[in-house]
Structure formats: C-alpha cells, structure tokens
Image 1 (cartoon, one colour):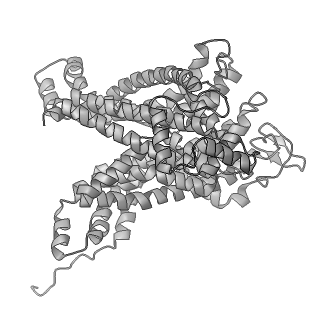
Image 2 (cartoon, chains in turn blue, purple):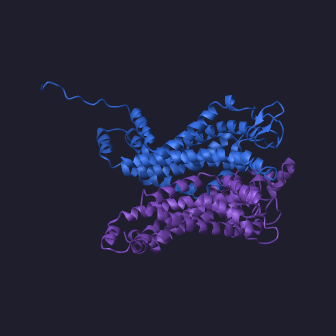
Image 3 (cartoon, one colour):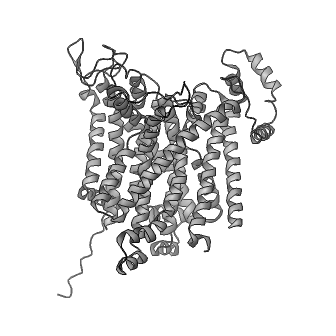
Length: 294
Length: 310
C-alpha cells in the first residue's frame, strides 16, 4: 500500500492548454456568435470559387437590382455594379482579400510590437524610455492621417497596407505588452528563472510571454476587427488594393455613386464588412468574459 | 503641479519635433520627387533641377529641415500646388469647419456615452448593462463609411428628409450637418460608454459606496453624490483622447458627405500629391492630437487628487 506511487499528473503541452482555454468560449453565447460569423466568412473565402455564381471581374448587365436576371440565365442575387459585375460574387471574392491582409497585417504588428514591449517592460530604464517615446510619437498621429501620409508616399498595394498597419499598430501592441510585463516580471517563476541563470530573452519569451497570452488574445481579436475597418476605409478612400480585384471598401465607394438608381446596391458590401468586424468584436467580448470568470 | 505641467509641455514640444522630422523624412527627403510633385509629372529634368536649385533644395538635408521647421513655426506652410494659394489660406477656414463638425459630434457622443455608461455600470451584469454593452459593440463594429451608406439610404432615398451631401454651397445649413454628425456619434459613443461603464462598475464595488448604501442614503443620492464624481474622472481622459480618433473619422465622413473640412482637404491633398498641403495638414492634425493628450493628462491630474499628491 505504501509503495503505491503518488500518480503525478501528466503535464499537458502548453499548446494544448491554450487550445483548452480558448475552447471555454463555448460557454459564452456572445463569443460563440462572433466565432460563428468569423467561421462563416472564412468558409466563404476558402470556397469562393464554388460559391460565387459569376467570376468576380466578369462584366454583364450594369446596375441590375437584387434578383435581376443575367443574359446567360443566371441571377444577380445582390445586383450588379456600373460595369455589370455581380455584387454577390465580388463580395465572396472580396472576403479573400480582407481575410488575407487583415490577419497578415495584425500578425506583423504583433511580431514587431511584442519584442518591443517585452524589452521595454523587462529591461526598464533607458530601453523603456526610448521605446515608449517612439511609441508615443507614432500614437500621437491620428491613425488615418498616418495611413494617408504613408500610402501617399509609398503607393497603394497590399504589401504597403501591411507595412502601414504594422507601423501604426505595433506601438499599441507594445504598450499593452509592456503593461503586462511590468506586472508579470515580479512573479516568483521569473525570479526562479533568473536564479537558474536563464538568459533575459529566454525569460521574456518562455516565462513571461505565455502568461500574458490571455489579454493579448483578446486584444488581437479587437485589433483584427479594427484592421478590417482600416482596410475597408482605405479601400473606400481609393487608397487600398489596386483594381480590378474586388475590395469591399472600394465596392462601397463605387456603388454609392449609383445610390440614385438603387440605394440598396452599396448596402450589401457594407453589411459584409460590418458583420465581419462584428464577429471579431463579439469574439473578443466573449473571450474577455470567459477569461474574467476564472 | 507647475513642474508637472512644464514637464508635460516639454514632452509635447519634443514629440512635435520628432513628428516633424518624421514628416520631413517621409515627404521631403527625396528632392527629385518633391520637384515632380510640385511642378507636375510633365516637366523636363532641367526645369526640375532649376526649380530645386532656386528653392535651395540642394542644400544639406539638416539645413533644409531647419529652414522648413522655421517656416512652419511662424505659420508659413508654403504654397498649395493645387489651389495656387498659400496653404494657410485654405487650411484655417477648413479647420474651422471641421471644428464645428467634430465639436458637435464629440459633445453628443459624450452625452450619450456618459449617460448610457453610467446606467450600464450602476448594476454590473444586469439587463441594462448587457443591453448597452451589446449595442455599443454593434455600433462600433460598423465602419463610418458603412453607416454613412446606411443612414443616407434611409434618410436621403427612402424617406427624403435630409440632404445627401454637406457641401454647404448656399451658406451654413444645419440640416446638412445632421448625417455627418450622426455617423461620427454612432461610431464614437460606444467607446466612451464602455469606458464609463467600466469606471462606474469599479466605483460601485468600493467600500465608500457600500457604506453610503448601508447608512440608508436614497439610491439616487448615492449615485449622484458619491459614485458619479469618482466615476467620471476616467471618462474625462477617454473623451479627450477620443479627439485623436475623431480626427480619423472626420476624414471618412467629410469625404463621404463632401463636407468642406480639414479631413477632405487632407484627402484631396494626398490624391493630388499636394505635398506642402499634406505636410501642413499632418502637422496640424498631430498638433491637435498631442495638445488634447497633454490637456487630458493635466486635467486628469487636476481632477484626481490621489495622483496629484502621491
């Protein structure tokens, strides 16, 4: 009886714990709604060629209302634009652009912002002062002003949008990471690692960063939603992706000019972009709610 | 307090200096492109070189920057390429128009945001709280250009009560201001409401509120006399910082409704590569943003004695 070893619970892999933590979202109806909207758009983007009734850039009958019939017998479920391109197909293909560039730009912002925040929060002192000052300078620009200047200088293209978003958002990420690190750096496990003689970057990346994941995941969701708005707004202002590929923001600005013919035409892409942003915001709210519970 | 203010304004000046260097580097460091932007793409190489020579563009970059900065400080922003007049002649009236639009929008968004935020935060997790939170998420998820389309769809086309553009061609018209203000308010109130709610919820958990309730004060008096005063300090900062976001929203709204303000000016300037106008707009925008941040900091310290005396 005494020789029965105490069973040591097997240590779960860190990735598994993160996934299990995220799976808690199913307890939040708000979060699940958001997740459902996002999954919907991801599926639409993946299966775009199967779902779209027309090729996105194929001209046809211009400015048809929703439900109008095409010459080849197809139906323009959401009408057509001034060149007769099917709005539904363009919304479906447009989701690919948004769901490629928004996560990519957000990811790049984190890739730059996290090391900056870790260094500022953990090293403190001069490093912190310099990085925080740079962040303050960039954050003092009204975001859209910054985007317009950058895009006006380097030109409008997908990669330039990613660069502009990274430049403008990384300081915000840095500030959040820095705040979290300032709290976490005084924990016992950090002292333990310091005593073991771990290198500073190992402590920052292995000990501190994983424990800051909760608020960062929530922030990433909110930020993704905001980047979707940004990409849409740049498209609306004509500073987004070059034509002819469909871009939700640009579709709105084009179709809006024909509101006198049918004001509903411009509404559909607006609903598309608003719903995707709503998905990210609801998911962020749900994640926050779930993470506060325990 | 005085030392704090001096230091805060010092930081502000330093920030503006770095911003000006950034703007200069982005827009003026490549003299060839400056010449092309000012003289147009159909000029000969010689013309451009002569112009650059005449305007001192072959001087060292540091010297050029200092001269540029000096002119900026005294309000000489150069001539607009597109409008063919000094930049300041177009800039200031437009900025005034934006001040009217943004001021009204901020006022209304603050009133709605503060009221609903306080109502939501009074009982955290209650029905009103959930209702306000969900509505706030909904409205902040709609980009400004989308709500512009939605609103003009309803109020301009289906039920034509409001004008669809806000160009103010025949003098000032309040009706033309309704839709732009509404779009800005819809996007901005939610953030103020959520911050107010968080602040209010935090105050409601404190011991002094519990004491006030337990000693039998009427609930309304607890809220008005004890909770509100402390809960409204944080939203003050949020509202001031919101001005920075408002400056972004104003660009979209002014373009969408053809309002002759600062935002649409910057937008036109960037489309026309009107370089001096872009520079002036950017610097003014950052100045407004930094100024409000500084005032927010000072105001917050003034309102919150716990920070002031610690």
